[in-house]
Length: 171
Image (cartoon, rainbow, N blue to C red; front, side, top):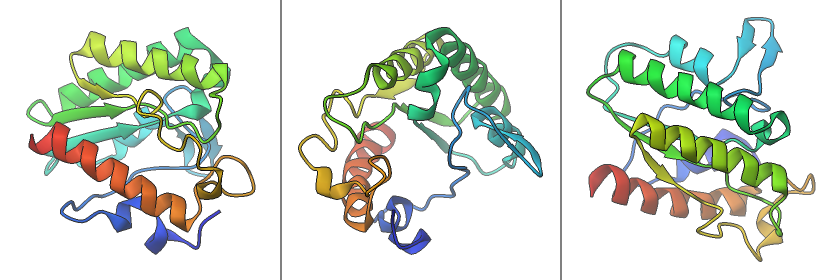
């Protein structure tokens, strides 16, 4: 629903250099089977380099809501544990799902609750975009699919993310 990578929120951050490891349609428990094998947050932790990770941010995932609380919690907890073992000195921040729909669908809050609880159990910082009301009352920032941000939505998301990153990682 956007014009490509240069318009997406990671490219719009100022003051932060990020490397993204994402794949649409995935999450902690939500797994996409691709030509390279299964893909979810855990497989991406496994694929990332062992060196050079000072800060690690997990963001999402509304894709997990349909799989239920326990599956999402278990997958998120395992992912955070693997990250803590791989990068014991890295600061880890978990940002829950940002709902593009208001009122927020129950499956999105289920995913948020599972991710929040797994982050708490792992002792890592958690930020809640649903509680912060990102995208509420701003349907023009979401594309015609009702889920993905437009270019303007990504610019807005970059502003929101930058504030959270500054507070959580630099504060």
